[in-house]
Every structure is written in C-alpha cells, then in structure tokens.
Image (cartoon, rainbow, N blue to C red):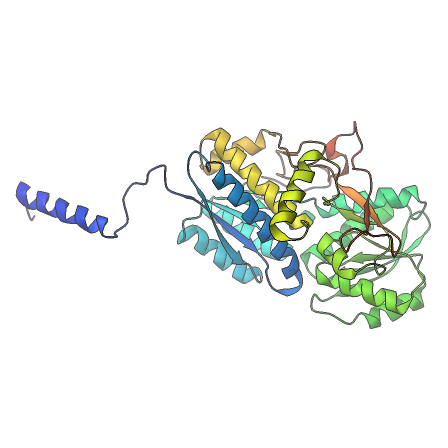
Length: 412
C-alpha cells in the first residue's frame, strides 16, 4: 500500500483548493446557490402559440419572485425548453434533471408530452408541476406520486359546458356530431363527452378522429351537412380549433357549434364574427377579481397584450411552487409533496382559493363557461368573449365538477 507523508498531503490539499478556485466544481453548495427549475412547453407546432403565452407567464413570475428576494434568499433560475414531441420532451426532461441540476420540472400543454415527462419525474423521484395538459388519464390511470396537475381536466371542461347546454335545453333527445383530435387528449375528451351525453339523454350520431396536422376540414364539414345534427361539438386543440371555426363559418352550416375545449389564444385568433356557441375556460382576463385585475394590468404593461389562460396558469403555478418552498423552507421533493397533499390553499387570482386534492394531485378550482358577443360588439380584438358565472356555484364544493373516486382509477 502506498503511504504519503503529512507534507505531501498538505501540498495536495493546497493544490486542489487552488484548482477549485480556478473552476473545478465545489463539493458543497451554500444557500446562495440558485434554485434551478426545468420548464418544458411546446413552442412550435399546433400548440406553439399557447406555449408562447406560457413562457411569458413563467418569466413574469420568475422575475417577480427574484425581485422580492427569491426563495429562502436564493434566486430562481428557470431553464426553458421547447418540448416538441413526446420523445424529445422525455429526453430534455431527463437532461434538465441529470445534467443541468433542475430540482423541479414544470410546464407542458400537450398531454402526450406531459405523460412522458411524468414518467421521467417518477423514475427520478422529482416533483413535476404539470400546468396545462388536460387529459383525464394523466391524473387517472397514469397518475404518479411526483406529479401535480394545475389545469382543469377534460371532465371538468365537459361538465362546465354541459351545465350551460342543459340550462338551454340543448341536450335531451338532441343529435350531436363531434370532431375529435386523434391523440391522447382528444380520445380522453371524447370519452368524457360520451359519458355526459349518455347521462343526459343526448345522442351521438357521428364522430370523426382528426390528425393534428389536418388544415382542411371540408371533408368533415360535408359529413356534418349530410348527417344534419342538432349540435356540432369540437374536441380539437390548439390552432386546429381556430381553423375549424373559420372554415365552419365559411361553409355557412346552420347547426350551432359548441366546444368542450378552447384556449383563449385560439378564440382570439378566430377573429370577431367567426366564433359562436358555448365553450369552457379555466380563466379569462376580464375576470372581476382585484388580484386578477392587477395581474392583467402588469402583464399587459409588460407585453403589450393581455394574458391568455396559459400565461395565467404558468404564473400561478410558479407562485404556488414558491409558496411551498418558502413555507417548508426546503426544495426537498418529499417535503414539497407533503405540503401540497395536506391540501394547502392557494390564491390563484380567482374568487375562491384552490387546493390540490390529496388522492389524485388535481388542483380543485373554479371553471367558467363563456359565450361570444355578437359581431361588432367587442371593444377590441380580445373583448368578444362574455364570461359566464363561475362553476361550481357559490356554496358548492369545488370537487363537484371533477371526476369522482369511482370515475378516476388513480392510485398514488
């Protein structure tokens, strides 16, 4: 066995210390080290516009948190990536955790991407706050202990619009024709719609699965004209909703169109006079809540336009993460999970506070149906949506629109 003198060891230690000062990584890290967060969301493709708003909301929250002193005196550093597709999303998520030092993963809009990121979080035992993907399956059969879901799931969207349809006698004995996005989100949304139709005596007479790269809807609109439904339902996502709405108006079909999914960026892109019917949303910038109005004013001043719902959801999600770290005084995954699972209440800029449900990690919150102002009644290009009353109603449990334990096969 080789032996070294005390002098040799001291020289080696001094040499190592000098090398460390020149750039070798330190062995221990102080509390001044930045808290790194990996953020993934689509910035290209049919959901790219939504991802763009998500990044604006995320950056605004990051800036506000850092200006207020950070978390536990440490600055937040967000590493943002275009998730692109499921395989790329998984690869980037793993790299953010393994190589870039992310302590938490956040983001996403695409349900297929979100599923692969959830699997990465589960394997690495790291927290993933899944902000914008709505598939029931993510918080159902595919749920895991390390993922929490901020946006409303498909069942809530269907139930929010469904209440408005029931109020207007547009379900019982009515004939429905649906157009559905052909991936996990759309399949999931269609399943929720079928449950609603079945429970309320509505008749689904036709459904078409549509690939996410389709831009010409004329073959499907001709099928609708031939079927003569009472109501047409959109189960599409992203800019396909905008494309459908514009072509539907051009075809002049007489059947009312409703949607079980619509993001406000897509509604704005449709333009005044093209959108009609009843749709669901998780939040809208005209919400009459003081905290929401302040957020809208600050965002608009910063970006020259009002926030879309994905900007809001990224913003409040980052604030919830900061609250959890600040109150637990930790970035430890298990401590953060325990904080969320005790159903801590969060101010998410709505009339009622929200909380994560302990058994499936879904955020319980209000949702809203909305209708469209008549053409020419909008004050500006962002004003043609008329927000309905918050659901569930005052005095009703926030869980009343969400999937029940019997409907949701989640096992954490």
